[in-house]
Every structure is written in C-alpha cells, then in structure tokens.
Image (cartoon, rainbow over all chains, first blue to last red):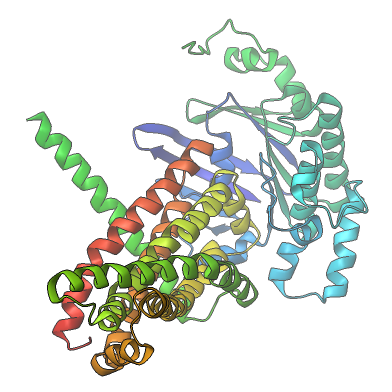
Length: 250
Length: 261
C-alpha cells in the first residue's frame, strides 16, 4: 500500500502541492487525472523518490521514504516499474539491453536467464523478435511498449504509467490500455496511471483521483466520476471550457 | 540601487552553481574511491575520449611545434643573426605550457561538448530518471567512468602532444632552417629536466578535472529541451576553456613555488 500524507512542494515561486493526501491500495489500478501542468507527473515522481517533498510523508508498504538515504531508497525502488511519458529508452542500447538493464543490476540471474526473461517480457507486450533493434528504429507506440517491457522485467509490485497514451494514435492508445489491463490481471500488480485522457481513465481504472490547484479534489470509481456533481470534476471529465476551471489563453 | 541588486543576484547564482558543481565533484570522487563504478563503461569511455582524440591532438601539436620552431628562428635571427636555442624554446614551451593547455582546450571542445550534450539529452528525455527507477545511480553509471577516463587519458594525450610537438619542431629546424639534428637535440636535453615534464602533466590532470566536472554538471542540470542542451554544451566549452586558461597561470605559479618545473 502507498500512502501520501499532506505533501507540499514548490519550485521557486511556483507552488505545485498545497497538501496532497492519497491512499493507493494493493492490487488496484488508480488513475490520477488533472489538467496539463497541474503536477500529476510530479506527484508520481515523488512516490518513486525522484523528487523530495518540501514537507509531508510518503509511505510505501508502511515505510516512510522521503527521508531514506540513497541505498535504502534503491531497495524500495526495486518494488517500482516506471513507464515514462517519453518512454526514456536508452539511445545507446538496443531493445534487449534496455529491457535487461534492471535485471542485470539486480545480479540475481544468469545471462541465459536474462535473455529468456527479455523474450518473455517482449512477448507479453506483443513485440517478439525486435531484440537487436535500436530505439531510434522504433515507432512511438513501439517505444512505449518496449519501455513497458523494461518496467515489468524486474517483476515490480507497483507500476507507474506517466501519460501512457499521449502522443500515439487512438488505436495504439487502446492497445496500450489493453496491455495495462492485461498486466494488471496476469501479474496482479498495483498500477498508478497519470493521464488526462478520460477514455483511457474510464477503461483501465478501478479508482480515479483528480488533482487540481495543488490538492486532490475528488476520488471515486469510474462510475462515480461519470455521475459526479462536483463542478470541477464534471468540467474536466466532460472536456468543457465552460466551468469553474479557467484556462489562461495567452 | 537596482544595479547592486542585479550584481548581488548574479553573484548569489554563481555561488550557488559553484557550490552545486563542487558537491557533484565530491559525489563523483566519493563514488570513485568506493570502487562502485561501471568498469565496462569506463573502458568504452577511455576509447571514446582517449583513443579517438589522438588524431586531432597529434595534428594540433605537430603544427604548434612547427610554427614555434619557425617563429623562434625568425626572432633569434633578428636579434643574434642566427637561429639559436630552437630546441630549448620548443621543448620548454610544448612540455610546460602548450602541450597540456592545447590538449585540454581541444578536449574541452571535442569531449567536454560531447559529454554535456549526451548527458543533457539524457536528462531532458528522462533517461537519467529512468536510471534511478532501474536501481542505477547515474553518478556511478555515467559520471564516474567519464571522470576516470579523463583523468587517465588527458595526461597520456598530453605526453603524445609533447612528443609530436617536439618532433614537429625538429623537422622544421632540420629540413627548413638547416640546423644540425644534434644541436636541436642537445638544446632540449641540456636544459630540460624531468620536473619540467611533470609540471605539464600535473597541470593536465587539473585540466581534466575542470573539463569533466563542468561537462557532467552542465549535463546533469540541463533543462529546456533541445535549446537547453545547446546552451549547456556551449556553456561547458566556454567555461572549461576560460577556467583552463585562468587556472593555468595559478597552477604554474604554484608549481614553480614548490620547485616542480
């Protein structure tokens, strides 16, 4: 279980979090929604320890991680798999080396077993036989799927998806959504998804939370979100420019 | 009043940057001393930084030695009516100053820029964050191999530059100016000492530290997409070159004070 308690964060004069509280239960797929630049990606980067809050606590399986030293944090990070918005595949390595990267670091498998595991992960995401290709030879959708294979290779307990469907066509986006559901069912992982794509959010989640103005302003199931009377959530989920959320134009 | 505020703000920003760069240098040094670095990547970086820089270093130093011999000959001919002490001037200038400084300046442009742009691109495309999430410390995986490679390869390249620079001067002296080979050789061997060689090599290690720390710091702190990568790369080259030339004066004064060269 992951528990976020009253975290505050500012970058210079830009206040991103004004007291975020959130609880993520084991085995669920939670989607954090919110407008562009509201801090969704920043929130999951706090959970995995890439950023530190100015104040507040983050518990991963009852262990407070914001004050851990580097070695202890790396131990906690072994529980995480992270799919980055830009895929973040290592340009200098081929697909096999990318997927095997985390496994080699763990130093618990032979080279033969690592090769087998890479094949298994690529087969799970439907991309067999591309082990020797470089990231520059892959399409946007393929990069995201390879990054997903890399994220699941070490068998993480929690998988974080940062805008998994952004920048790819609607059909490929649905393929990624199906993969997230498939992985959640077959690997029984806890998935934390950040997106502003409501089609994806409704399809893959069993829990949705909305981040607005530095706080979580609402939580619930997809059906509860569809029926909500909260004007902020309603405006966002219906994609309307009319409502309490004002977007700056220039 | 506003001018003082602006100067103060710039000064504070510079102090902060210097502090952060020093902190990164200490992190790199600590990781290196604990032996936690990627040995395979270190070998690869040595080839990339050292072996692949050999042609440009040799070309630069050969022509520097040649032009130095030519200028010395013209100057001494004007004063003494004959070209004298060419070997000494070329030898001392190359080994103590031009060898280490030119090698460092060329490497700041070739290697410093490459390190800053590679790490900067990795930073803006979230590859450095990805390393963290895969249980890898980027300092250990990216910075330390480059640090070791620079500290080892820059002095080696400086020795190559010294040798080729002196050979360049030799060819101009013998075949263009008609000086006997043994005279050029004696000019070097009679006056130069081993400390002179060490003087240049010690400076080259400091120059290597300047280049690799600046490049890693600018790469790891890069922000703002392609424009940011370009800015970090340019800043790395400019800062490294300026710091090499400024520190050269103080290092020379310090080494001479301690009797090295």
